[in-house]
Image (cartoon, helix red, strand yellow):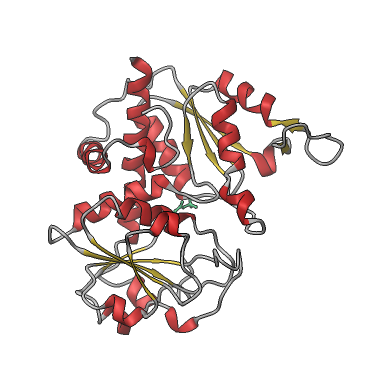
Length: 316
Ligand code: CP
């Protein structure tokens, strides 16, 4: 694996999941492969899980880590080719990224969408600028449209907990007080489509995700109908793709114990952070069906598997 930008960088998602199982069974089995190497983690946005799990994953492989919080610690970057830099941006990505890669052997970057200009967000300007200008592999730590480290984790978590060969997996939209990106949901749909699971996406009419990621999945608008018989319930808010970035208010879509009762005692998943009693009710997230904390723990093993594959490729 050279970069980890999307599922397209993975030859076979299920064999990648096998590698995550191997790491989880023995996280400290290979503490020297990254010796003398540095992982740079560049954050344009906040993070708890991605930052901590990827850092720990690097330590488990013997790497060192440098974290750069661009919004608070560093110079404001310019991305536009030919820009006349007489405004806020102090440094162009054409210098900044090669300089970063002179200090680091792998770079991770997190950059959320602005949610104002759909074409601009879906062109992934920041992520692609890093890939173009880096002299080392790049890992997507959540970009404008995708969150592949989360999705690998999610697929692993389902494989680890499934009770039947082809579980029914439902991705359900849920309310949120803010406009959120579509990235986690887009990415989850992309990865689920590589499995033979019975996969359904349910959202209020008008909040459909972009077809480029959902084509082939079952799409529903009736939440209760979709939840019937589900083995896994992946709960997530996203803002409108079609009325780009608009937040919609559908409080009746919160996941409650009454909704959970419609499922096949579904395991409840969420990428976190989650707004309690808005997205998911307390009794569901605190209940026996909730696997959100172990799902978050699995971020460590997924990140470590990705880093190890990149390090192995660098040894060739
Ligand atoms: N799920 C996830 O990416 O969490 P953070 O935003 O805290 O990294």
